Image 1 (cartoon, rainbow, N blue to C red):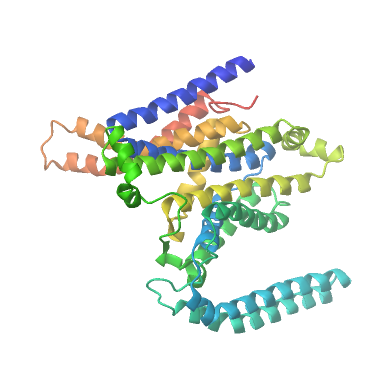
Image 2: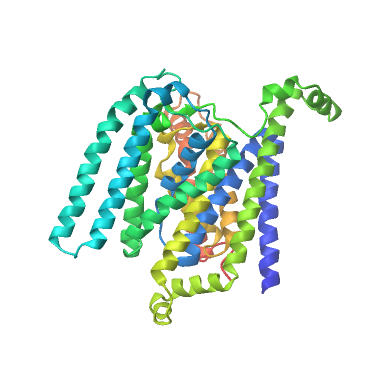
Length: 436
């Protein structure tokens, strides 16, 4: 049985390699490698969701919020600091943050010390409200001053100017901290209410990124983020690279794009393999067996003395950390943070389709789903355009039916995702690589 699973796994990934090779030969290797890099990031994100759903049965539809926090970490860690903005309002923002944190800690301390009841609740709310208004007193003028500093170029505080790989780690940490706070509030809810809560909280996170220009430039976007790889134009001027391209008989400009994408692929593959190794070790450990026991029968696990809520919080944080790392990797690859691009279709629906199609509870299935679904998502539109051109080849150029069908080719992505999901659920209800 295990031998059959291994052979099926090898076969599926060989098919994926073949599909990417076809794109390389028929379109271009730059396109194929661009798809490969996004497939690697999607696979990392799918593993994060699989840790939550496949290990513990937690239905999290707030994936885009954690991915957005990972992207924000890249700005906060790797972007160069804007000194003028720090001088204008940095001190005010820090003071406001300290006041807000002190108010929360003081409110929690008082609530624990006082006897539960109406009085303790009123004191708790009073401390939070007073802390909010005092923090706003410093926060408002400071952020306005920051956003007035060359708003066309900066208008935000910037980051720490550290290496971008540090930002990937910070993205996971930031997403994990947010998941802990969310989990402490929402994990006691029933699965459908948990889904609603995580979706709402993720929308709040994205809305904050869009609105707070001093933090992430809002809808004006943060562009030109540092990258761990050299720029193509610099490679095209380097003597060693020109010599390498000529020795391979390749065009220098085209090869520079391929070389950079290959470097990104190596980095992303290293992260994916490390997370995959850790995930497999965890899944096959006593901890992993305990998580699956809790997933399959919470009542029985609770009767055996297992801390079900605590384990749910643990796995929720771990999965969110992985999603945050993937979000940071995606922002690094794009070279910019665009808060408006964090919408449910890309970061929630697609990732869930990856996990379902690949096989929930199986990390290899999550990786396969990440590769397959993202490949189809990208290639469905050109394939649909080719199909419509073939169907309408006998029609006139100005035929209303032909024009309608050609315009509809862009919607082939959504139709393809629906068909793939229905076919897999009908013939492979546990996914292409089901959990053993």
